Figure 1 (cartoon, rainbow, N blue to C red):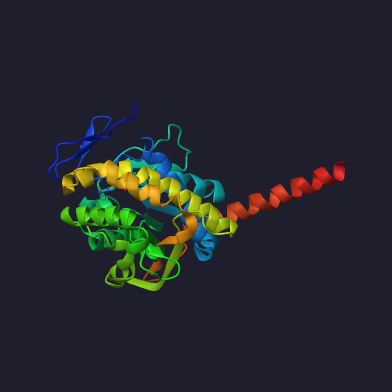
Figure 2: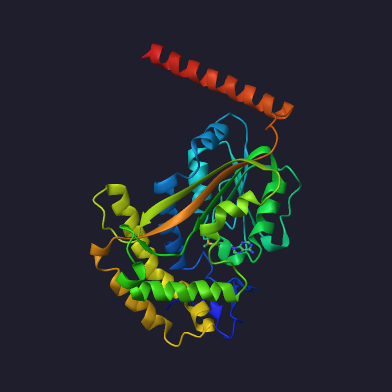
Length: 332
Ligand SMILES: C[S@@+](CC[C@H](N)C(=O)[O-])C[C@H]1O[C@@H](n2cnc3c(N)ncnc32)[C@H](O)[C@@H]1O
């Protein structure tokens, strides 16, 4: 039986519940199938198009000290777990309204249940990196959320943002609404439903102006990434991310069902199924975009004495390990 993470009261009053907790976030809990799978498919799309972190952040995370990362609205925790596998020295704190589907946490991954619309619970200048990905559907004041992220960043620390645009387009610049009327119409209803809940449905489109309006931020790099909605491309990466998107889109109907009902759709399942039917035809080359920002908090990322010692100890350990390896080689 499918777990229904909502009590559907209708009229904009659907409440989400999970293990006794209740909140008014409008999408299902990340730890319940098939929302878990949807988020993990889209995680792969982001990773293949933009990497989990840009090179300059990877360099920082490999500097031998314990760099601290905050993952805001960490969802399934997939990004955090992959980061820990790639950068074993880091420490990640994930915050979300609900627990991720992880039973055993690595010792350098801590998780807190917290509603970030109430601000961040951390001191100023705490984290080296803050990661924000696709949390617009829970943020009535996206600007305030970013301002809090910058507050808890250390001077010189990195803010990483990715947000989906929710507006289908065609690769050739043609009229997507004419070519894919059903999927465009149902996503328009979803954008309207977000607006009715005082959420900005176009955070992804406007992410550059959001970050421009936050004080204390510098070195802003904005990029916009094109993703196929179906596997129409011969390029292996685009074909894969097109497959992932189409799988995620097939699940999205259930994800946004309660919102569509609240918006007044009488047959959200039927209307959504018509949209998915359109995506079986790969000749039309539908695409979507996501907006991505890499920015820094003003100031220099100073190395504390503690971190300097830690880095030196790490270097000595590396040196010893390499000598051990050399001795073993000589012995054989
Ligand atoms: C679409 S999911 C994205 C999850 C993850 N960032 C990713 O990219 O895979 C949005 C997540 O934000 C969380 N969220 C929404 N509103 C929140 C809030 N007010 N405080 C904390 N987390 C929130 C949701 O519970 C959900 O796990």
